[in-house]
Amino acid sequence: MDFAPLAHVFPDTTKVTPHGHLEIGGCNVADLVAEYGTPLYVLCEDTLRARCREFISAFTSLHPETEVHYASKAYIGPALAKIMVEEGLGLDVVSGGELAVARAAGVPPEGIAFHGNNKSAQELSDALDYGIGHIMVDNLTELDLLNKLASERGVVQAILLRVTPGIDPHTHAKTTTGLVDSKFGLNISNGQAAEAVRRALECTSLELKGLHFHLGSPIFEFEPYVEAIEVVLDFAAQYREEGFELQEFSPGGGFAIAYLRDDRPPKPAEYAATIIGALRQGCEQRNLPMPKMSVEPGRSVVGPAGVAFYTVGSIKDIPGVRTYAAVDGGMGDNIRPALYGAKYEAVVATRMNEEASVTYTVAGKFCESGDILVEEALLPPLNVGDIIAMPAAGAYSPSMASNYNENPRPPIVLVKDGASRIIRRRETAEDLMRTDVW
Image 1: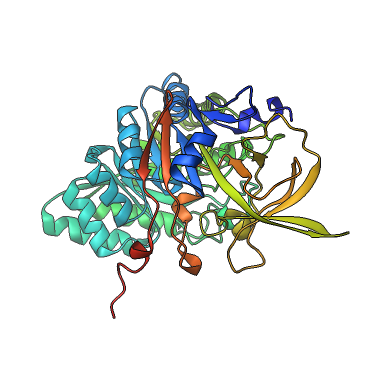
Image 2: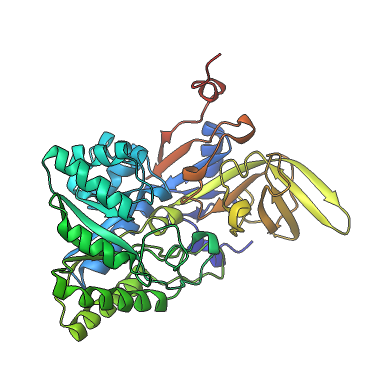
């Protein structure tokens, strides 16, 4: 098969050897599978670092007062967190667990922003005790609770209010977060956001720095960002007379990546030009000072760096219907296809030089009919034992993995310059029962 049309959905370092084997980060995939088994997730360190640098360069070259926070929900672990810090990124965390990983990895607290629509008192307390840079307040209940907890500690916490601008990003309904009907954020249109501004300005233990929104993910279009920025700047200008100053602003993340051969998402530089251009123009039109800014790429950093590998265990042909190729992973390690119809490419990792002539449905091993990884994959005639590679799998696969059917979660291996190292080991049966009591 011709690899060229698929090259952009694989990590930057991916090559095909003369023997038809995929090579990532200088490591032959056949060797990785022999050493670590399958299912297996491989992350290319060079691709990770390149994406970090690309985002920092794209945004800071146009607006130097921009911070890039990696969205941990896409996937986080101590090893990855350390890479983010080394590349100059902060972290966007959404739970006490993600905050704990950040602390364990030594992420500077001032570079952490805490998001989430239902932060517990314990989570907020942990964030305050660690001295994190920003808390994105999602609702009025949280605002009051955070002010109380900060007051008890004698600290003043910097906050941004997460507002919902009511803009459709034209992505999947289950990953859309900025509409009027959303569990996230303070609604601008019904007065919740205005009430939050008034109350925040009265909170003696909170310092209201600015506003944040997140429209959803992935977003392939520019217009939703522009429209949302207009709405938020109108709101900021309206409440300037009440003492609100937009010192900081965040348009969230949601930056798209290529999953399929025909996908051509915007580049970070294009997102940056659109967002910063709209922000600068909007501020000038409303006589607002240009605020500091933060952006939150997650999928767009780790997604392109990851490839999932599976072994074909059985092949089932239903004449006139379809041919199933069942693999040793599935919805337990990648719920995205079953959850919201996510699409992926698939190739045979050690037969890249062979013609793809048969259409297969790549099915997982879990006890659900909906456990389908790829509905239609054009592949060489398969044999039991073949290795299937699924690219663009670094984001929201390991992070959403489960132990359904009591299956252990697969390992994650980092590759660079011909060397590999485990950054998360494969779980064992003992791990599955570690929290059980009997």
